[in-house]
Length: 258
Image (cartoon, rainbow, N blue to C red; front, side):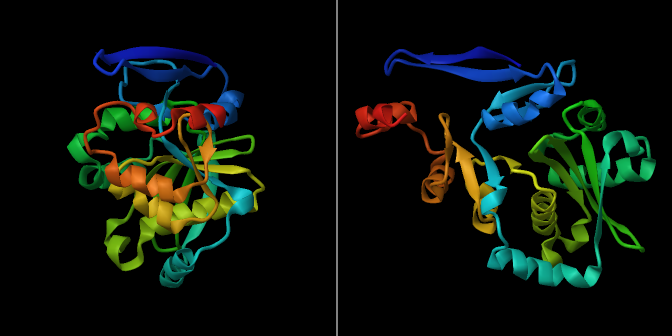
């Protein structure tokens, strides 16, 4: 892997000089190490040919510590009557050109991705990336309920994108169930980590509330302090006059504990 920094706006008044941090994947077997360093895949520019990643506050489940929460069990009881099965396939075994599959994903994206973020061009680009190695299909004999695009390598799974039948969104919490089911599958297969993407803002708190065994990347290490994470999410979009390190009451203690 290769890591590079991209300058953002400077603030000389507080000596804060921001850089966005990126990683270029050179081999697929680097994925567990890339995710472990806090990186997530970037697909915002479909002209970029390589698989690149951005550093962010990401969330993962440490599967040795994962067990069903009361919320997981509640949602599962609601979904059980639908008799949903899960098929996990390597992307090479899946027909990525199937029009019913593509239409399903794009219909979901039109309603659920704000600002037209998931265009047909971007969907094709995401599916072309080596990083996303598997497709999980959620189905019954009668219908398709949803799909998950996942990166699976070594002991690591990344729950990357999900698309599901929205008529079950409120009645069955289908999206939450699919995430739980994917995490459960990863644990059953003996994996160590299930990554759930970024965790910013109040709208991300459902991930924090629903699952046991969570840690988040705090810029230095994987942190188990869920109270801190909840506070960060609730205050993410409030203006601060300097970076969070400079806002600490005791910066020496932070440095000594690195």
